[in-house]
Length: 150
Image (cartoon, rainbow, N blue to C red):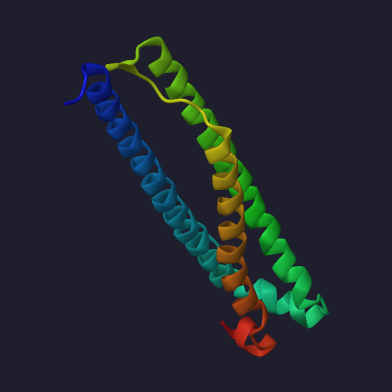
């Protein structure tokens, strides 16, 4: 037999585990979507700028400088997206603190946990760099004539 306190702890513990699992699934899913979006943005940008890249290579700009320029663009997109996401989450959190969700166990609102947010930002940064590096590297390593002729 269990007391009501032990039974209640089990339900609340299960709810917390469910929320943590849901949170981790959302983080992984968000990282996958973000990396795909950044890859597509950089890929389309490099395809549209093939001639400019070919001209830069013909003038003598090293491939590493061209790739570095695209990585700076990726870092700008990453920082802008991370800042915007942080601001949106903060606004939603403050709104839900003012009027929390009613659950049978009590009121619920999101809590900002830096042990989850900072590793997520770091993972997003690494994934963004890799997703931006692939199309930039592939385009910068093409032949000059192939790039200029389109």
